[in-house]
Structure formats: structure tokens, C-alpha cells
Length: 266
Image: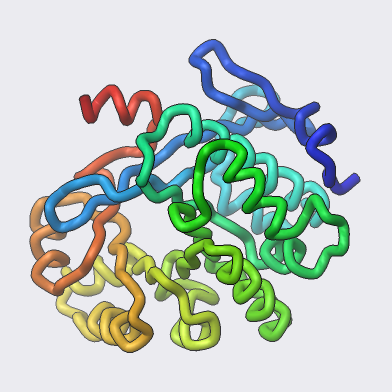
């Protein structure tokens, strides 16, 4: 069953002892963690919400492998993806400072369902109103379109335009991997381009063309740039020298529950 009502979603949510929201669905435990994103002054401008999935033995499952597993049904994938977004938003509203960006991952399949499904609880208007109910604003929410392929470019474009029309920002995640390509960027015209760590590593190894081309593409589209996977001081300085806007990686901050991030910042 595809979950569609707030009451149905609520059945799978609970508050943990740490005061954070979690979800249990189909034998899996879902947890929110948040990784900070910094500007060139090393000030936090936002957090990317990341999903941790555990099986019934509390063994972790990589989310990218989970969502790409062909043995899983579309219903299971969409329900878990939506439940993860709900706990991310709730936890962010509980523990975040205001005027900080929330970056939320979204599957292309889910973006299209938001747009074309006629059930009111699945559309972008509901996401907008729910975010506002929690004291957040769409202008401070960036939906990161994951690098997964999607067969119908016209439907995807229409869905992304609808999301933008409600005031949300759009980012292309992991640019340089899978479907996060120049073609997708040119089609969807994102506000933010997140460059995959693999391009950073190529740059370190002397192949500078991929990342310089990505930066040129972002500037052409007037998109801000996030470099992902910064793990050393040299990588940070190299990327800063290229004029990149924002930085994300273990050097600067690891994914943690948001209240722990705030404690560290204090």
C-alpha cells in the first residue's frame, strides 16, 4: 500500500529517547543524520539530511544500494523515501537554527509522483504547507535530485518546474555520476550544483578538465556550487582556489543527529 495520508504516515513514526523522530517500516528502522555545508568563511549555511537505514538485526544498509535494489517494489521504495523526508523535516524543525538551509534528497520517481499524482496529500502544495506548519519556509529548503536515471524527461522537467513554483530550491546531486549530467543540468536549470567527490579526486590526480567543466556549466546556469567529499586541508584549499561557493565533507563536519551538530558548534 502506498502511504498517502498524514494518519498513515504517523503510524510509522515515533520519538526516540534522544527527542528525535524515527520511523519503523516493513522491518526497517529509519534515522536522520545531518551533515553541515559551509561557505568560504567556514560559516554553516545549511545541512544535508541523510538517511540511515537499519534492518531488523540493527545492521546498517547503504541507502544508495537500498534504493537501487531491483528486488524492492516501487511502493516500498517510495514509502521509505517519503518517511525519511518526514523525519528529516520534523527533526530539522526541532533542532535547527532559523534561516539555515535544509537540503533534502529526492528520487526522480518521487518528484514526478509529487507532481502528477492527483491525491492531494502527494503534491508539492502539501509539502509546502507542512513545512510552513513546522515553522520553516520553502525558500530555505533545497530538494536535491539524486543521480538516478528516469525514463521520461518531460515529466521530470514538469515536476521540477512545479517544485520551483512553490518556492523550493533545486539542486542536482552528485554531478558527474550516473544521470547527474550536463544534459540534466541544462534541462532542469537547478539553483545549486553539487559536484561529486570523484571529480575532486580526478582533479587531485592531475585531470582538471571534469571539475573545471562542471564549474563553467554551473556559472553558465547561474547556479551556486557545492563540492562534496572534502576530507583534507589541501582539498579544501584547492577547491576554494577554484572559486567554489560551498563545501561539504568529513574535514568540516560529519553526518550526525542535528542536536549533536548544534552541541559541537556551541
